[in-house]
Length: 102
Image 1 (tube, one colour):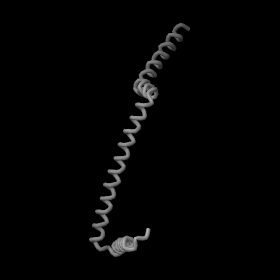
Image 2 (tube, rainbow, N blue to C red; image 1 turned 120 degrees about the vertical axis):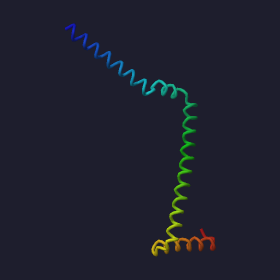
Image 3 (cartoon, rainbow, N blue to C red; image 1 turned 120 degrees about the horizontal axis):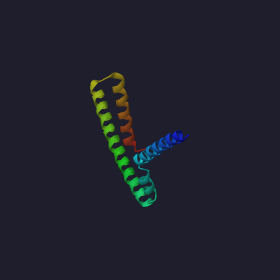
Image 4 (spheres, one colour; image 1 turned 90 degrees about the horizontal axis):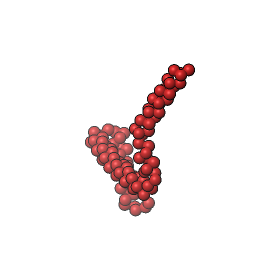
């Protein structure tokens, strides 16, 4: 009986050590400390929001420029369906600009 209890205690000690190592790896203490400082949490979230916004704006600009470049190349190729479609869009935009109606 003593042997089983000793093995059980050793196994429990190993599990407790694994659990404490996992908690340290998760940085749970730092997270709880951050939750106790709402000002710092707001600051970090604000900065990360700004970074996301700038990233979205730059990414959208690059993708838009790439799309325009591809459309320009397609117009130069004089593909009948695509060129007519793009020309129709250009005409609609010009009519809209001249009439000034929203």
